Length: 278
Image (cartoon, rainbow, N blue to C red; front, side, top):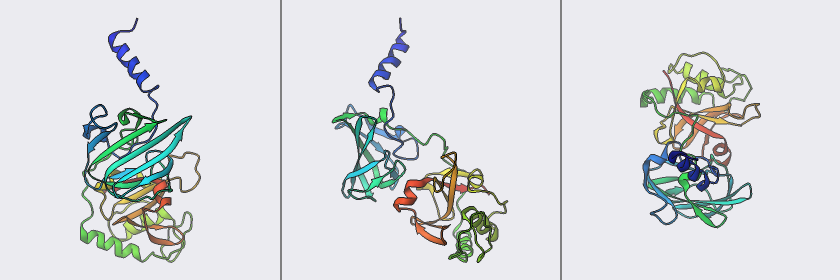
């Protein structure tokens, strides 16, 4: 009794085992539109053209079981299924065999293309059907230009005076009085003359920004995190820092410091880069 269209949808439902998604999104934009070789044509996987040095996420929660100069394999479980996801043709790899990774952990950066395989219980399946295509709650892109070098220099020099300031939840400074993460951002951008804005939370600051990809991030942009402390809603932004370039950020921790965003902790809580609306 199905129409041709309904039958096509039903067969697709069967093929995808109920459209079960085994992993998140491997890159923070709609990578499906860049596929050059699909599953039926290419060695049990798919290939996509991507911008060089695009960040690749772990996509599943699991353990790194293989890591070379240009390839990473991660094994995890979903229900009764054992899933192994392999990313190849990488430009660099940031994890080692035995590392525990999360969906949001950056495991490497691409060359000008990426090859993805998914093995489910010993059988290869089509990654197009089982991975997310993009972070659905974010719309990437902005018309706002990044800070000029001179603007960033002013911001960086002003913000550096807060280094070593103790962390105080709700604190607004100025240093050396205690300051929290959003208080530091508010103080640094106001004090350097980059933006005159009101004091709010990290979530409130995020709401005044345009999400951008890692490839578009420039010194002076912001980087946001989730789950750095317990909240009733795990989607709430809980931490923010100033991106300094070269995978470094300045943020109010214990105390205010400059640190790498590539550490396992920060990668496990990473949400997105943004550009402040000015």
